[in-house]
Length: 180
Ligand code: INI
Image (cartoon, rainbow, N blue to C red; front, side):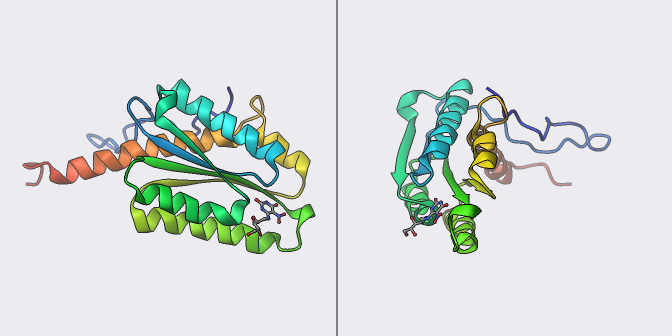
């Protein structure tokens, strides 16, 4: 499956300094995916890519919850509600907004983007924006294609990385004896 991380690993950034980076493993992780049904020819593929990514990184099917909503506008509330349950280490929000098909493209995009960000910021749970915003169906299908770089896969990978990173940051904050 295409759509591997483009951000690289934990390289040294200066002598003795190693950046804190999340490891995108999915063992024992519980992740929720919320998928908009609008443009389902695209979003079904994003969802399949996200599930494949989680499973490729070790997630059991029982630890993946998939929730459907009508459209991208409904993603934020469902994502926030899932995140607020405390049952999931990350939430992936998947949708597809195509400019050609709607005069309120800009509204739908910004409601989805702002709302998904708000869901993450108010709950402290990583909620990843996996919504395609494209000019036409062809561009959307290209970004949902397993061979050409499935953005659902990328969103799930980001979710796993952020879940691990937040765990490390919180764990690190509790450690003693590192200050001089
Ligand atoms: N929802 C999408 O997910 N993608 C779109 O391209 C889209 N268009 O074209 O309008 C869309 N509209 C529906 C919207 O998300 C809501 O479901 C609807 O407005 C009801 O609240």
